[in-house]
Image (cartoon, rainbow, N blue to C red; front, side):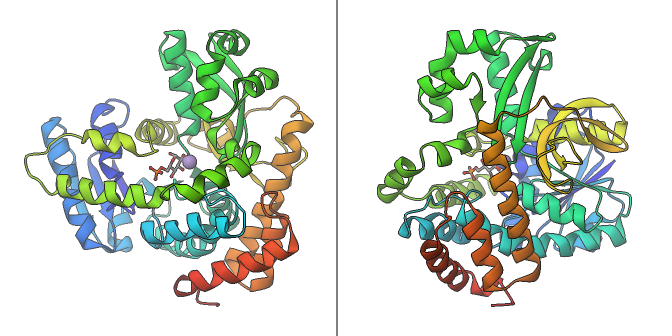
Length: 417
Ligand code: G6P
Ligand code: MN
């Protein structure tokens, strides 16, 4: 089985390769094609990937190319994990919005919009190459903002599913607290990518979330950066991205005095690339654990194994709403548990969503619709509308100022500016 990774020169790639090596019984990979336009990253990362497979006694081979056509040809699944503009563009996403009093984050709020504007056209172009060269392949999209990018792919008729590690992270954390293997834990996960709540945690079919919160509420709240009182009162666990909403002003205040995450990650990446270039390093470096992508390889392996092996098991993915959340457009992309088989991911029915969550989900989903319009068709007015629709921006004067700043800073990525 051949897999292709677009953005294969990412410093995250060894995380993926580690998963392919450990979980080889679940997913017998024979070739991993790493595709990246940047040879200075691709070369050390591919070398590292080869050493990791060899060290694990894995028979698969790693190929490296800058050509998407060549890399995806014959692949059964194509993982897309790219970052247009690298950490430098991310730093702009994180630092511009706070100048206007808004949270600076690469997927949430105005920064997420800028990222969508840069990213959607690039991913759509790549997906067209996949359609021509590997028409049967599934596209597994990790590229942020995952909800918007996945919707763009689905709207263009691609065989795509969006994936994020937030849900698998919670599953592993709760399983750890319960002292059971993760396979026995399933989540009542609902919302949009990076805007989700765990409303139940089933252990062997029984909801243990109330007792988990009673015993470990403080620790769980801490992990998502929210007050224990809030989490206990909700009786649900918001993802840590909800902190940007529930503690918006406090986060903006923090961001004024802290270096942006992009700068931290850029420093880590430089160090990681050095390690990857060192022939004596043959296993995933510890440093990689400092990135946010924990369990990302496990989620990817499970998803691809179920798509290609028609397993029909339940995984949390980004899919078309199609009536699952009746208060959203059918075409919206949501992040919920879905049965994954050769036919794709079919969302399971979801209990009615309380207004406390439905309001925010609806609001952000409408923003995502407008953000995608702006990313696909360009135009400062579309950007303004998306910002005006976002609950973390909303005001005319702020939307106006941010539109100017974001378009100016991203000019080189946006042919229509
Ligand atoms: C989590 C999110 C990803 C995001 C990452 C950022 O894993 O689910 O979507 O890309 O965090 O991690 P980083 O180390 O780049 O800050
Ligand atoms: Mn994510």
